[in-house]
Length: 110
Image (cartoon, rainbow, N blue to C red; front, side):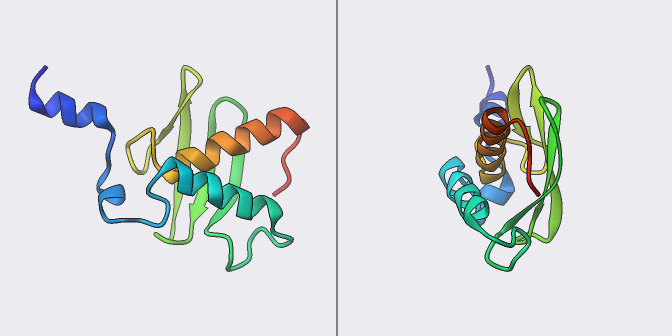
């Protein structure tokens, strides 16, 4: 395996390298908890807004830090952030928690 393949497999994106506020799975998980507890899920306090969720296919989030929509798709049941081009950013952490929440509660509240 050459160097280029190793870099690609690491999944680290340029967004993460810039110390984005959602650069790790843990930060995404913490942001999900903040989102879950918020009375107004579109308030300034929440960095992520859930725009759409299609079970086991994708979730569309709006990231207020980068002011753009982010798609986290599921490839063979594994989440992959198409914006960051990685499987270990905060968007993926948020999407994992969101899916678990939906699986437990059988519904999603936007």
